[in-house]
Image (cartoon, rainbow, N blue to C red; front, side, top):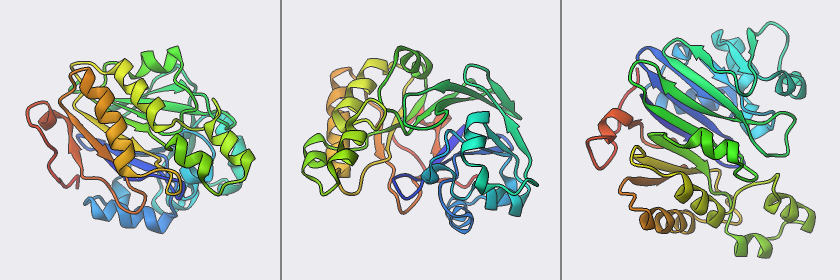
Length: 273
Protein backbone atom coordinates (compact mmCIF):
# COMPACT_ATOMS: atom_id res chain seq x y z
CA UNK A 1 0.00 0.00 0.00
CA UNK A 2 1.15 3.52 -0.84
CA UNK A 3 -0.35 6.87 0.08
CA UNK A 4 0.16 10.59 -0.24
CA UNK A 5 -1.72 13.46 1.37
CA UNK A 6 -2.32 15.68 -1.66
CA UNK A 7 -2.82 18.66 0.64
CA UNK A 8 -4.46 19.39 3.96
CA UNK A 9 -5.84 22.47 5.67
CA UNK A 10 -8.80 24.80 5.60
CA UNK A 11 -8.25 25.38 1.86
CA UNK A 12 -8.66 21.71 0.98
CA UNK A 13 -8.07 18.10 1.96
CA UNK A 14 -7.50 14.98 -0.11
CA UNK A 15 -5.60 11.72 0.40
CA UNK A 16 -4.50 9.35 -2.35
CA UNK A 17 -4.32 5.66 -1.39
CA UNK A 18 -3.08 2.96 -3.77
CA UNK A 19 -2.70 -0.81 -3.69
CA UNK A 20 -1.99 -2.84 -6.80
CA UNK A 21 -4.05 -1.27 -9.60
CA UNK A 22 -6.54 0.31 -7.17
CA UNK A 23 -6.33 4.04 -6.50
CA UNK A 24 -8.78 5.84 -4.24
CA UNK A 25 -9.14 9.46 -3.19
CA UNK A 26 -10.37 9.99 0.34
CA UNK A 27 -12.01 13.41 0.06
CA UNK A 28 -11.70 15.87 -2.81
CA UNK A 29 -11.53 19.29 -1.21
CA UNK A 30 -9.63 21.09 -3.98
CA UNK A 31 -11.03 22.24 -7.31
CA UNK A 32 -11.22 19.63 -10.04
CA UNK A 33 -8.31 21.24 -11.85
CA UNK A 34 -6.20 21.43 -8.71
CA UNK A 35 -6.85 17.77 -7.92
CA UNK A 36 -5.57 16.88 -11.39
CA UNK A 37 -2.48 19.04 -10.82
CA UNK A 38 -1.72 17.44 -7.48
CA UNK A 39 -2.19 13.94 -8.82
CA UNK A 40 0.28 14.81 -11.58
CA UNK A 41 2.81 15.81 -8.90
CA UNK A 42 2.79 12.22 -7.62
CA UNK A 43 2.64 10.64 -11.06
CA UNK A 44 -1.02 9.58 -11.21
CA UNK A 45 -3.42 9.90 -14.15
CA UNK A 46 -6.82 11.14 -12.91
CA UNK A 47 -8.50 8.51 -15.06
CA UNK A 48 -6.83 5.85 -12.89
CA UNK A 49 -8.79 6.85 -9.75
CA UNK A 50 -11.16 4.01 -8.91
CA UNK A 51 -13.44 5.89 -6.47
CA UNK A 52 -13.69 9.10 -4.46
CA UNK A 53 -14.68 8.45 -0.84
CA UNK A 54 -16.19 11.47 0.94
CA UNK A 55 -16.07 11.64 4.73
CA UNK A 56 -18.41 14.63 5.24
CA UNK A 57 -19.90 17.57 3.37
CA UNK A 58 -17.67 20.51 4.30
CA UNK A 59 -16.27 22.28 1.26
CA UNK A 60 -12.64 21.70 2.18
CA UNK A 61 -13.38 17.97 1.74
CA UNK A 62 -15.85 17.99 -1.17
CA UNK A 63 -15.18 21.06 -3.34
CA UNK A 64 -13.93 19.24 -6.43
CA UNK A 65 -15.83 15.97 -6.06
CA UNK A 66 -18.62 16.64 -8.54
CA UNK A 67 -16.45 18.27 -11.20
CA UNK A 68 -13.78 15.57 -10.99
CA UNK A 69 -16.34 12.75 -11.06
CA UNK A 70 -18.07 14.15 -14.15
CA UNK A 71 -14.81 14.87 -15.98
CA UNK A 72 -13.25 11.45 -15.39
CA UNK A 73 -16.23 9.16 -14.84
CA UNK A 74 -15.14 8.48 -11.27
CA UNK A 75 -17.68 6.87 -8.94
CA UNK A 76 -18.42 8.61 -5.64
CA UNK A 77 -18.94 6.93 -2.27
CA UNK A 78 -20.55 8.76 0.65
CA UNK A 79 -23.17 8.41 3.36
CA UNK A 80 -26.74 9.39 2.59
CA UNK A 81 -26.44 12.25 5.09
CA UNK A 82 -23.41 13.62 3.29
CA UNK A 83 -25.10 13.22 -0.08
CA UNK A 84 -28.07 15.29 1.04
CA UNK A 85 -25.87 17.93 2.64
CA UNK A 86 -23.72 18.53 -0.46
CA UNK A 87 -26.30 17.83 -3.16
CA UNK A 88 -25.65 21.19 -4.85
CA UNK A 89 -22.25 19.87 -5.98
CA UNK A 90 -23.88 17.20 -8.14
CA UNK A 91 -25.94 17.33 -11.32
CA UNK A 92 -27.51 13.89 -11.13
CA UNK A 93 -25.39 12.19 -13.79
CA UNK A 94 -22.62 11.13 -11.40
CA UNK A 95 -22.32 7.52 -10.25
CA UNK A 96 -22.96 7.71 -6.50
CA UNK A 97 -22.88 4.81 -4.07
CA UNK A 98 -23.80 4.95 -0.40
CA UNK A 99 -22.09 3.49 2.63
CA UNK A 100 -22.82 3.46 6.35
CA UNK A 101 -20.53 3.75 9.33
CA UNK A 102 -19.71 0.33 10.70
CA UNK A 103 -20.15 -1.48 7.38
CA UNK A 104 -16.95 -2.11 5.35
CA UNK A 105 -16.91 -1.48 1.61
CA UNK A 106 -14.57 -3.22 -0.83
CA UNK A 107 -13.15 -1.14 -3.68
CA UNK A 108 -11.17 -3.63 -5.73
CA UNK A 109 -8.03 -4.35 -3.63
CA UNK A 110 -8.85 -1.84 -0.87
CA UNK A 111 -11.30 -2.27 1.98
CA UNK A 112 -12.81 0.90 3.47
CA UNK A 113 -13.92 0.72 7.10
CA UNK A 114 -15.91 3.88 7.93
CA UNK A 115 -16.58 4.84 11.54
CA UNK A 116 -18.49 7.67 13.19
CA UNK A 117 -16.58 10.75 14.35
CA UNK A 118 -17.51 13.77 16.43
CA UNK A 119 -17.53 16.84 14.20
CA UNK A 120 -19.98 19.60 13.29
CA UNK A 121 -21.18 18.02 10.05
CA UNK A 122 -24.35 16.21 8.97
CA UNK A 123 -22.97 12.67 9.05
CA UNK A 124 -19.21 12.74 9.61
CA UNK A 125 -17.02 9.66 9.41
CA UNK A 126 -13.36 8.79 9.37
CA UNK A 127 -11.97 5.72 7.64
CA UNK A 128 -9.43 2.96 7.94
CA UNK A 129 -8.20 1.61 4.59
CA UNK A 130 -6.78 -1.90 4.35
CA UNK A 131 -4.90 -3.56 1.49
CA UNK A 132 -6.63 -6.92 1.20
CA UNK A 133 -3.54 -8.50 -0.38
CA UNK A 134 -1.05 -7.54 2.35
CA UNK A 135 -3.11 -6.54 5.39
CA UNK A 136 -1.42 -3.14 5.53
CA UNK A 137 -3.73 -0.57 7.12
CA UNK A 138 -3.98 3.22 6.97
CA UNK A 139 -6.16 5.27 9.33
CA UNK A 140 -7.44 8.69 8.21
CA UNK A 141 -9.12 11.11 10.64
CA UNK A 142 -8.62 14.73 9.59
CA UNK A 143 -11.65 16.31 11.32
CA UNK A 144 -11.93 14.95 14.81
CA UNK A 145 -13.63 16.96 17.52
CA UNK A 146 -12.70 14.45 20.20
CA UNK A 147 -11.36 10.89 20.20
CA UNK A 148 -14.08 8.51 21.35
CA UNK A 149 -13.68 4.90 22.47
CA UNK A 150 -14.92 3.78 19.04
CA UNK A 151 -12.38 5.95 17.25
CA UNK A 152 -9.54 4.67 19.43
CA UNK A 153 -10.58 1.10 18.64
CA UNK A 154 -10.88 1.78 14.89
CA UNK A 155 -7.44 3.36 14.58
CA UNK A 156 -5.42 0.94 16.68
CA UNK A 157 -3.33 -1.55 14.74
CA UNK A 158 -2.64 0.73 11.78
CA UNK A 159 0.65 0.80 9.89
CA UNK A 160 0.16 4.51 9.17
CA UNK A 161 -2.04 7.25 10.57
CA UNK A 162 -3.18 10.58 9.15
CA UNK A 163 -4.58 12.54 12.10
CA UNK A 164 -5.44 16.20 12.44
CA UNK A 165 -3.33 18.43 14.68
CA UNK A 166 -5.25 21.59 14.01
CA UNK A 167 -4.17 24.30 16.42
CA UNK A 168 -1.93 25.38 19.23
CA UNK A 169 -4.24 26.35 22.08
CA UNK A 170 -2.34 29.52 22.97
CA UNK A 171 -2.23 30.68 19.36
CA UNK A 172 -5.92 29.91 18.87
CA UNK A 173 -7.13 32.06 21.76
CA UNK A 174 -4.89 34.96 20.71
CA UNK A 175 -5.84 34.71 17.01
CA UNK A 176 -8.07 37.24 15.30
CA UNK A 177 -11.08 34.93 14.95
CA UNK A 178 -14.43 36.01 16.41
CA UNK A 179 -14.99 34.46 19.87
CA UNK A 180 -17.70 32.16 18.52
CA UNK A 181 -15.32 30.72 15.91
CA UNK A 182 -12.64 30.11 18.52
CA UNK A 183 -15.16 28.34 20.73
CA UNK A 184 -16.36 26.18 17.84
CA UNK A 185 -12.80 25.15 16.87
CA UNK A 186 -11.91 24.27 20.47
CA UNK A 187 -15.18 22.45 21.17
CA UNK A 188 -15.69 18.70 21.22
CA UNK A 189 -17.32 19.02 17.76
CA UNK A 190 -14.51 21.12 16.30
CA UNK A 191 -10.85 20.20 15.84
CA UNK A 192 -8.05 18.62 17.86
CA UNK A 193 -5.34 20.81 19.33
CA UNK A 194 -1.71 19.79 19.03
CA UNK A 195 -1.69 18.48 22.57
CA UNK A 196 -4.97 16.60 22.17
CA UNK A 197 -3.69 15.01 18.96
CA UNK A 198 -0.40 14.09 20.63
CA UNK A 199 -2.17 12.51 23.61
CA UNK A 200 -4.49 10.59 21.30
CA UNK A 201 -1.59 9.24 19.23
CA UNK A 202 0.25 8.17 22.37
CA UNK A 203 -2.83 6.17 23.42
CA UNK A 204 -3.14 4.21 20.18
CA UNK A 205 0.47 3.76 19.02
CA UNK A 206 1.66 0.18 18.77
CA UNK A 207 4.52 -1.77 17.23
CA UNK A 208 2.91 -1.83 13.77
CA UNK A 209 2.85 1.94 13.36
CA UNK A 210 5.55 3.19 10.96
CA UNK A 211 4.49 6.73 10.07
CA UNK A 212 2.24 9.45 11.46
CA UNK A 213 1.19 12.34 9.22
CA UNK A 214 -0.20 15.37 11.04
CA UNK A 215 -2.92 17.03 8.98
CA UNK A 216 -5.37 19.93 8.86
CA UNK A 217 -2.93 22.38 10.51
CA UNK A 218 -4.39 25.86 10.87
CA UNK A 219 -2.37 28.48 9.00
CA UNK A 220 -3.47 31.14 11.53
CA UNK A 221 -3.16 29.30 14.86
CA UNK A 222 -0.52 26.64 14.38
CA UNK A 223 2.91 25.95 12.94
CA UNK A 224 4.43 22.72 11.63
CA UNK A 225 7.18 23.01 14.25
CA UNK A 226 4.73 23.16 17.15
CA UNK A 227 2.58 20.32 15.84
CA UNK A 228 5.52 18.03 15.15
CA UNK A 229 7.16 18.77 18.51
CA UNK A 230 4.02 17.92 20.50
CA UNK A 231 3.45 14.64 18.64
CA UNK A 232 7.11 13.62 18.70
CA UNK A 233 7.35 14.15 22.46
CA UNK A 234 4.24 12.11 23.20
CA UNK A 235 5.13 9.31 20.80
CA UNK A 236 8.74 9.26 21.92
CA UNK A 237 7.66 8.55 25.48
CA UNK A 238 5.94 5.43 24.11
CA UNK A 239 9.10 4.30 22.30
CA UNK A 240 7.89 5.17 18.80
CA UNK A 241 10.80 5.11 16.30
CA UNK A 242 8.90 5.83 13.10
CA UNK A 243 8.31 8.98 11.08
CA UNK A 244 6.34 12.04 12.16
CA UNK A 245 5.51 14.07 9.06
CA UNK A 246 3.44 17.18 8.30
CA UNK A 247 0.83 17.52 5.54
CA UNK A 248 0.98 21.04 4.13
CA UNK A 249 -1.85 22.89 2.38
CA UNK A 250 0.00 23.83 -0.81
CA UNK A 251 1.62 20.58 -2.00
CA UNK A 252 1.47 16.80 -1.62
CA UNK A 253 3.51 14.86 0.88
CA UNK A 254 5.97 12.31 -0.44
CA UNK A 255 4.44 9.02 -1.46
CA UNK A 256 4.85 6.69 1.50
CA UNK A 257 5.28 2.98 0.79
CA UNK A 258 4.14 1.06 3.87
CA UNK A 259 5.87 -2.19 2.96
CA UNK A 260 9.17 -0.36 2.63
CA UNK A 261 8.61 1.57 5.84
CA UNK A 262 8.45 -1.69 7.74
CA UNK A 263 12.07 -2.23 6.79
CA UNK A 264 13.46 1.29 6.36
CA UNK A 265 13.69 4.38 8.50
CA UNK A 266 12.35 6.81 5.89
CA UNK A 267 10.03 7.15 2.89
CA UNK A 268 11.03 7.15 -0.73
CA UNK A 269 9.33 9.33 -3.34
CA UNK A 270 7.63 6.99 -5.78
CA UNK A 271 5.34 7.12 -8.78
CA UNK A 272 1.99 5.39 -8.48
CA UNK A 273 1.34 5.39 -12.22
